[in-house]
Image 1 (cartoon, rainbow, N blue to C red):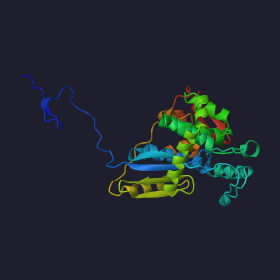
Image 2 (image 1 turned 135 degrees about the vertical axis):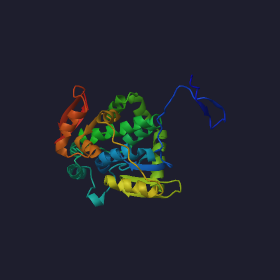
Image 3 (image 1 turned 30 degrees about the vertical axis):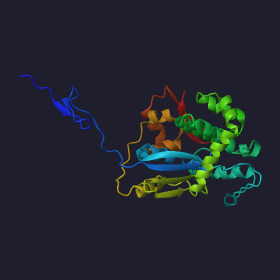
Image 4 (image 1 turned 180 degrees about the vertical axis):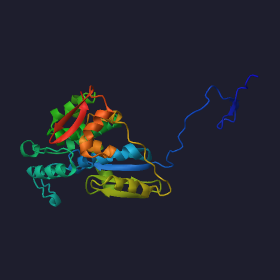
Amino acid sequence: MTEKNPMICDLETGVCGPAGDEEMEMIDFNQPNEVIELYYVTDPICSHCWALEPVLQKFLAQYGQYVKVHTVMGGLLESWDGFADVANGISKASDVAGHWLEVGEHSRMPIDGTLWLDNPVHSSYPPSRVYKIIQSIDQQKANLFLRKLREAVFVFNQNIADEEVLRGIVNELGFDGKKIVQESAESEAQALLNEDFSLARSLGVRGFPTIIMVNKENKGVKIVGARSFENYVDGLQQVLPSEKITPKLPPLLVDLLKTGSRLFSKEIEVMYDLDQSQVTAFIENEIDLQNYQQKQILGEQYLEKK
């Protein structure tokens, strides 16, 4: 006896017909009922934002399905004229070196900081304007650009307010560095940056990093400073009180490496809940070291493509 072709009815059109050859289709019912707005207010030279990278990276990898991320430039340093960060004892460029050293030692995200003694960043506005230009073209490339900015200034001690440094980083993304850096010096780029400043003020932001999560009822939480992973998970649950939030599994290490140029030991430890002593063995077990290399800088291990 020949089996009859199974029938299926289209719920949209009401038309019934053959189901086709597909016997089984994998579907995912674990989609969030609501996606909240997450505002990450930051700055390219914010040391505590660099310290937050491992935790924020893990949070977005596991709970990113619940949030729509808006990265907002906050304008930490327009110039040194009249600038003072009394809380951190900073009134001139050279004062930053000691502060960055403390942040690096505490967070174990590598920070050099000696550029503040011999080649200080005069303003965080130039790299922020370049970020806004790239963001207007491609948000993913803008995210990678911000990451590369931070690696350049914190780890490799490069002055990211320098046009030549900026052109080089933009070129790495496959864009025309000269053209984009020129565009960033025009009034339109500053206007884009001013929009971010206005948004940050409207959100009541007074320091960096600040993460604000807002639900559809326009209620939210504000988390200031580099906090623990659990702080952000708790904050997310507070703005989604009727939903049981469920984390995704961490991405494979090889997939995580595709999102940026390199990973530092602390980032691997946080993402995969490892002790520092376990990182080398974990790396060797997870990836083909013919394609990657392990290096050391500022006393910390990192991994990058060959």
